[in-house]
Amino acid sequence: SIMPATLSAISNGARKGILFKGGSHLESLGNLRAIAFDKTGTLTQGKPEVSQYLVKPDLEDEKQKILQIVAAIEKHSNHPLAQAIVRFVTTKNQNVPFELDSIEDVSGWGVKAFLNGETWKIGKRSFMDGNIEEVIDEKQRSFLEEQGNTIVYIEKDQQVVAAFALKDIVREESKQAITNLQALGIEPIMLTGDNANTAKAIASEVGIIHYIYECLPENKANEIRAIKEKYGLTAMVGDGINDAPALATADIGMAMGEGTDAALETADVVLMKNDLTKISQAIHLSKRMNRIIK
Ligand code: ADP
Ligand code: MG
Image (tube, rainbow, N blue to C red; front, top):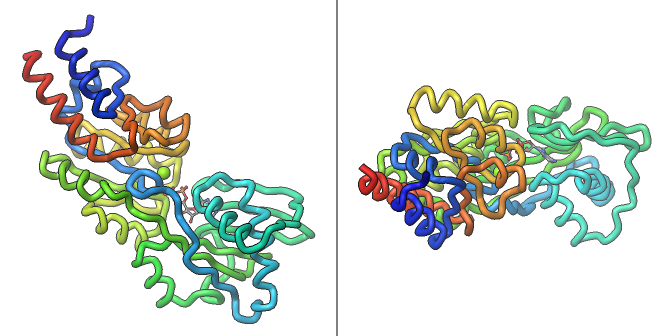
């Protein structure tokens, strides 16, 4: 049966916007050693915006047509980057007239589509076959990435033809939330599918020292196992479908309130207002409750 001190702590948490699915997680929170954070949608708002559209210099005439094709492909993906690209194109140009023959979502890398006998790929650098320098040089690329932009590349028949720089904004509370956890002696770790430069930029903006980049969705759970092994009791905070296996693997899974159904269902704790500073509050609540029980 559930102890009165536990019940009172659970309802106290609920009033503060921290939803616990049961008392056992509330008890163990006080002993947490590490917390892994997903980047996009967790530390950041998850609503990136296109800040630049670049096209291969000799394809300047096809700039608009490429945009239309990209939007026709990305409207089939629900990745936040895809949605940002579609928003960018459709606000500039109302109709997206291209019909695709087929499309393949390559989770963690991008999308691949066929139309009019052409093969199009949209996604990260390592997903491209062609040379990205046809569109963006090394210096410009690292500059944009170090500013926290994610660059998405576009390829037609194995030739890189265009690129977008997209910028996602760090949540207002992220830095404070990380500082609070560090003060409690808990190691914060960021997990992301993004590249090294962008990962480093976002991590340093929120004060995280330890980050894991180019982490494929299927590897997130393995990273959590390794963190548990190294640090001990570990929580994971995430929002996406991709995060569900990692949330389940962590000792305590935490979902952002506005996260996907898969994340909300898998999590042990839900942060109702997407407020990451609730995590340290929940830990204080747990420590207080454990003192009363003992
Ligand atoms: P994250 O949520 O950390 O960005 P993902 O595993 O979802 O990680 O994606 C990793 C990378 O793959 C993205 O940063 C992006 O470069 C690329 N990518 C994935 N899906 C798409 C898509 N639909 N359109 C463009 N790029 C994509
Ligand atoms: Mg996410």
